[in-house]
Each structure stands twice: as structure tokens, then as C-alpha cells.
Image (tube, rainbow, N blue to C red):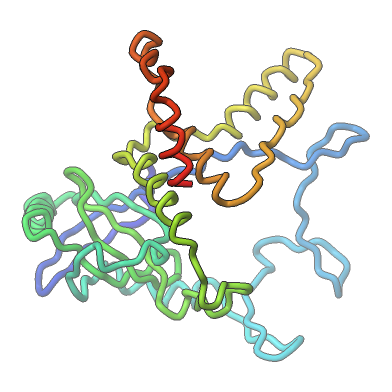
Length: 282
């Protein structure tokens, strides 16, 4: 793993030297823009619209547009100096994880002990594990200040950068939200039944990126020079109404049917009464 940051966690007067590593990786399939006529990859060119010429990185500064067309300029060193003095993950408070809405979470990092910080690292890890608390901290990474949640994953201290409250958009900005929604009691009962039938312990290993697998498969076919044909879309079920959709979903979510011998009694004359009961539910 590549070290992305070195510093220390501090809580009270305790300092825990740590190294930071990205806990996640982007598995998107990277593709380039290609010139169809000759098959050459296109390159990204930085050009100045005023001078009409390409610009090298050493000629570039960063600017903040405070009025249309007017900028204040910053050199990279100026911005770096604002955060470089503080290589610290400063824990401000300890809270319960359940108090943080998932909308706040950004990116996860693993923290390992620094060369001299094993004992302090183990102490913080075990204290957090036994209290069940997570730390809310401030940290600067790559010239950007961020809030962070310090928590335990297995036997590792992890850090999740989180948005500041003013970075979260208000739901009042979301268009067309229903006002005073009216819910049909029968539909609500069936919806809750469906949720119960689909409820299961979270097993991340069973979820796969089907799209990425299909793209990789198509890439292999193209490499082999095969003619790639796209399968037609499966016909969509013509669902009459919400109740029918819920009923169909409930049926589809039922466990696998029992063997035929066990199922035969259901076909006896009593099935009529069973059908009646079903009609009352719907």
C-alpha cells in the first residue's frame, strides 16, 4: 500500500504517530478517447484562450474568481503552507457511530502505527473498542481541511473523512417531494411484508459489479476479434398498479417451493378457501 499521509492522532495530551493508506480503490475500467481515423489516443492539452498556446505545468497558478473575470492568484506553496505545519488528526469529541447519518461520509483510510507509536496505537484502539465510541476529528490532507470520524475496523484504526454540515444540501432543495403523502393501509401492510421477506444480514461479498464484468467480457471478445452482439432487453412486466406490483414482489421473494409431494395437499378442495383468504389480503 502507498502511504498517502504521515502524522499523528491526538486526543487530550496523547499523541499517536500514524501512517495513512487508502482503504478503497476505484475498480472502474479506464478507457481513453481515441481518434477513430487513425486509432491514436487523444491527449489532454492545457491551452490559454487569450494567448492561443499550450501551457506547461510550471506556468500555472491557482486562482479564485471573486468577480467575473477577476482572480486572486495563489502559488502551490502558499496553499501548502496553510496545512503543512499541522500534521495532526486532532480528535475533538467522542460520539456514537449511530449518531452520524451516512450522508456525511466521504472516503475511508486505514491508519497504521508510526515507527514509534505501537503502544499508543494499541491503547487508543482498545479504549475505543471497549467504550464503543468513535472520535470526531479535524485533519488537513493535500491542502484541504476536513472533518473525520476515527473508528475501529477489525484490529485497525480507520479514518473516514466526512462533510462539514454546510456542505450537505438541504432536502428542501429537492424538487417534487410529496406534501402530506397519503398511504393506503393495505399497500403499506404488503410493503412491510415485502421488506421483511427481503431482509437479510449484510454480506458484502455477494454483491458484484455486473456492469464491469460485462465490459471486461466484451473487451476479451473484441481482443479475440469476435463479433460482439448486444442481447435485446428482457421484456418488462406490465404491472397494473402498486398493489399488483407489491403482490408480485412478495410472490417473487418467497423461499423456494417445497417438493411436489409436500405441495400436493394444497391442490385439494380446500384450496378454494385458501384463495378466498388471499383475496381478502389484496
